[in-house]
Length: 245
Ligand code: SAM
Image 1 (tube, rainbow, N blue to C red):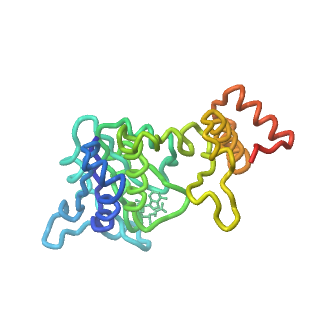
Image 2: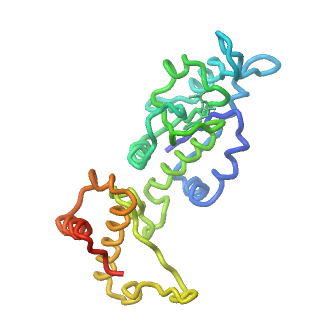
Image 3: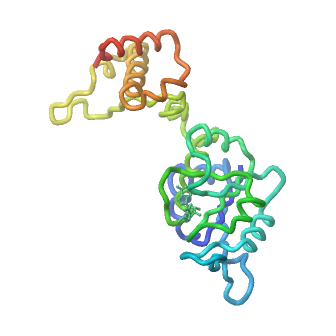
C-alpha cells in the first residue's frame, strides 16, 4: 500500500510517522508513506499556496493550482484522493477497514478556511471528517486516518494483538486488561485471569466486553452481530444481572 500526504507543514508529520507501528510497518515494507510539501507545487518566486476569498470575509483559502498539480503528479490508476474536512463523512473503524483495502491513498490536508471549492468538486474522490470539531489543519486528521488504516494491514501488529480483538473490531468495546503485579495497593487482578483456564478466561472476556458495551455504548449493540450466548448475556444485563467479577 502507498499513502501520500499532501501538506503545507511536512514537519508536523515526520515524528509520528517514524515511530512505533507506523515506523515499523514502513520498515517491513507493508506500506510506503510519503509526505509531499504543497509549497513545492506552487509557482512563482514566492510559491504562494493561498489567497483571499472572493466575496470578502476573513481567512485565506488554499489555491487550486498547487493541489491539482501535486495530486496529478502523484496519482496512479486506482488511487483514492481524500480531502480531510470537517464536513466530510464520519471516520470510524469501518471506514478505516475500507481504506485499508485500497492500494493507494492520497490524503490532502486543508488549512486556513479550507480549500477552493473546485478541489472538493473536481479533484477529490472522498472527504473524511475525524469528528464534529474544527482543527486548524488536516495534518492531525491525516495522521489519525493513516494510523488507523496502517494498523489494520496484515502483519502490522503482532498476532497476539490482532486488530479484530480491539474495540469496534467486532462492533463491540473491548474488555479490561491487567498486567503484573497481581496486587497493586490492595487492588487484585480478577482471579479468573490467574486461573490458567483458557475457556473460562475467554468467557470472562466476552462477558466483560459485552458489559462495557452495554454500559458505555449501548448504541453499538443495535448493529453488532451477537451469538445466541451473547444475546442471552445482554438479556441478563437487562434484568439487572452483572457479569462475574
Ligand atoms: N472553514 C472550514 C469549515 O468551517 O468547514 C474549516 C477549515 S479548518 C480551520 C482547516 C482545515 O483543517 C480543513 O480544511 C481540514 O483539512 C482540516 N480539518 C479541521 N477539522 C477537521 C476535522 N474535524 N476532520 C478532518 N479535517 C479537519
